Length: 95
Image 1 (cartoon, rainbow, N blue to C red):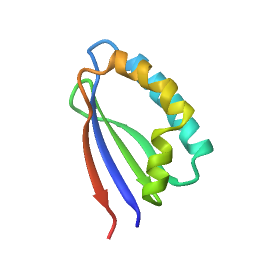
Image 2: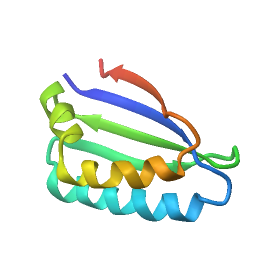
Image 3: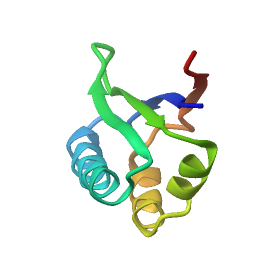
Image 4: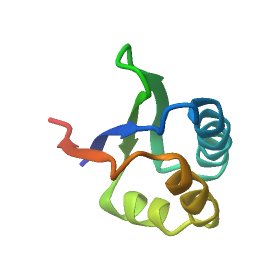
């Protein structure tokens, strides 16, 4: 079963460029080293300082593996420093 995630991230005003740099580096690592990640894309919302991440994983195991990768561990504190609160997460199942 393919799993999807839509994450809404609010970034502290003035920290957008820093957020984008960290996230795009993370995105490159995911695409390079996680074959179970079918999609990991960043979108900038028309709402100021708001970003949407669209993710798809082949299986629950692929999603679990994604959460424990070294690149996620390295990016976590950097992203946490520029985010304005916790991300909004919506979990989806592909029909």
